[in-house]
Length: 213
Image (cartoon, rainbow, N blue to C red; front, top):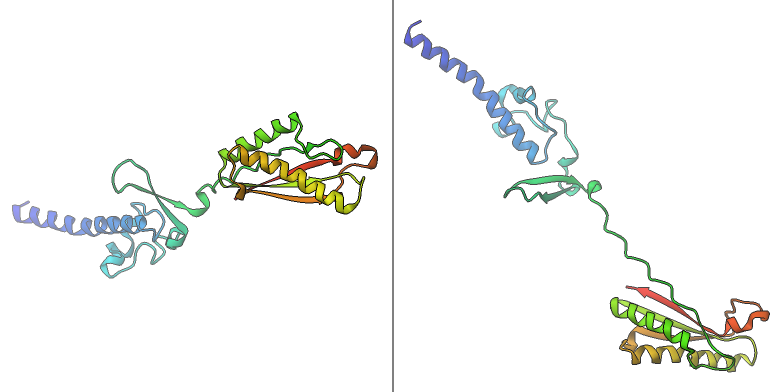
């Protein structure tokens, strides 16, 4: 075989291979752009050795590569893998873990009062100290104190007594460093009994409602 013939064969082979290589590279580029699914070497020859960048059909445009969920940028998050600059991982939104829900507020109380009294008992102060610690650790949390009474006495009197009981706790919290704007005291009087008349002493109480904003 003469040198001219050998050169002609080499040129012919190169002419046949180059379009396939170009198509494969193009398909890979469109895959990375989210326009199609994986392009194998068998698919690299689709569109007669061309692709969408070369005025022909290829990834995401014909049967060679089918459209995938990456076709819609709104459904894709690009997450940097930290391996090297420009190395990114495509994740569908459904694959990204949902943000953890805020932890529910703990339950404090209730605390109890002596008959016709609004003075905090020693054990009640211990509970109030726990409330103070929680509110300091959670600056966005607020608290509502509900003052309650048993059914002895008039409704009007018990309404005022419930208010004093709620005010006692609020005063304690403020004196121990909690902003008064985060503390609300309300009186329910005798309108919200949790126990029967045989256990009236358990209705002389303050209930705490914590809200995490």
